[in-house]
Image (tube, rainbow, N blue to C red; front, side):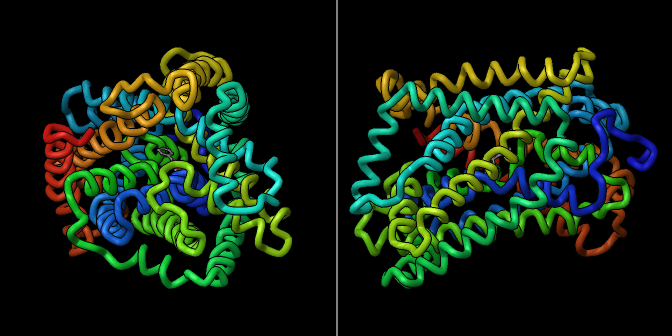
Length: 453
Ligand code: PHE
C-alpha cells in the first residue's frame, strides 16, 4: 500500500510548501549560524568547508531522500514507520530500534542545543554599544560563568519547545515559520553587506574558500561529516517524522534538494558575514562556540540602526533554533503518543523534562561542573555534542542508508519516489548503498578507534 492510502494520525501538512518550510525550519538553526562558522574556524577554514560541502552533496542529500521516503511510506513516528516498513520488506522487526535510538538521540541533542539557544535568547537583551570586540569576548565569558542565568534561559527555551510540540506540530509551526524564515534570511544578507565594509572582506572570504589540503585529516573529516548530518537534521528521524506528514503527491527528490540548498546557503552566508569581522578586528578564528556571540554584537555596534538589527537578529536566531528544537522532540513524542496512547501534551512534557534535566548538566559544565569531562577533555556540553553529532547521527545515517538501499524492495522505493529507472536513480542508489555506508563507516572507525578525543 503506498502513502496515498495511509495517513498519519498526527496530521498532514497543508500544501506542498509547508513541508519544505518545516524541513528547512528544522535544518536551518544554530547549526548554520552558530556552529558552522566556529567549526570552520576551528578546523582550518576552506579545508573544512570543502569536505563539508562534499559530505552534504554525496552523503547528506541521498540520506535525506531516504529519510523522507521512510517517513512518508510509514506514515507514523520514526520507530513505527521503521517497524511498518520492516514488515513490508519481510525482515527483522528489530529495525524499529533505529527509530527509537533516533528519538533518544533527539533528546540528547535537544538538551545541549537548548542551552546554546538560551544564549541567543539572552543576547536579545544585549546593549550593542560596547567599546570593542574584546569587550564582547569578556561579556560572553562572564555570561558562561553565570550558571543560574544559563539554566534560566535553557528552561525558557525548553518550555516554549514543549508548548509548541504539545499543541501539535501542524498548528503550532506552519504559520510562524512561513513568516519568520524569510526575515532571518534578509538579516543574514544585511550582515554580509556589512561585512563588505569591514576592510577584511576578501581575507574572510578567501579563508572560507581557499582549502589548505594539508589540514584535511581524520578529525576534520569526522567533524565535517558530523556537521553535515547535524545541519541537515539527519540520522535521528526528525526529517523522517516530518516526512510522515508530507502530502502524497509531493515529489521527494526535488523537495530534498530545495531543503539542502536553503540550509547550505544560510550556513555559507553566515560564514561570509562573520569571518571578515574576525579578521578586521584581529579576533581568533578558532575561538570556539563563543565566536558569533563576540563578532556579531561588535558588527551591530558599528552598523546604522545596529541596536534594532541586533535585537531582531537574535530574536530570529532564537526562532530558527526553536523550529529546529521542535523537530528534535517530535520523533519521540509521536512515538509515545502512538504506542502508549497518551495525550500529546503529556508525552511532550515528559520527554521535555528529560531533555531539560540533562541540559542542566550542560548549562553547569561552563561553571560549576567545568572539571567534569566525560569524553576526552570535553566538558559535559561538548561531550553531548560530540556523542550525538559525531557518533549517533552518522551511525543512524548508515543504518538508514542500508535499510533503504539494501533491504527495501526496489519497486516500493520507486513507487514512493515517483521516479522511473534511469541514471538519476542509479547514482542515488550507488551513493546510498555503497558510498555512504563505506565512507561513513571508515571515517567513523578511523576517528573513534585511532584517537579522536
Ligand atoms: N539542523 C539543526 C541545526 O542546524 C539541528 C538539528 C539536528 C535539528 C538534528 C534536528 C535534528 O541547527
